[in-house]
Image (tube, rainbow, N blue to C red):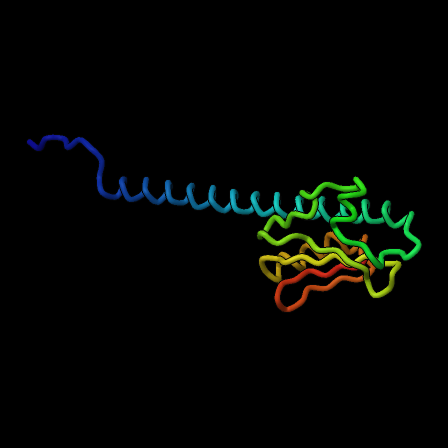
Length: 142
């Protein structure tokens, strides 16, 4: 008479490893997606803060945005330096006058074209013009 074998089979071990790998794969993708969403929201918040501060500063300027820069906004107390942080790299969000002294141009490096286009979509309601250059640079005029 045969004795009953105890333990787990190779098939059960492989199935358990596959289920575990699938759970880890899904968790990593959710983490990366959430992390990217945080960066996008941080960038959008920073741009909105910069635009608001810039237009507050603009009210008292006879030359419009002609001489605007980040340091002027900070020195005047309209905004703090952290609002110019770019969440994707060590470069800062840059500001300057637009095509006319009545508009503000914001420039920032993006990690890729898809992110740049996503940012453009989110800011399209506020920007007068915007584009993503081939080197993944966002340029918006407000």
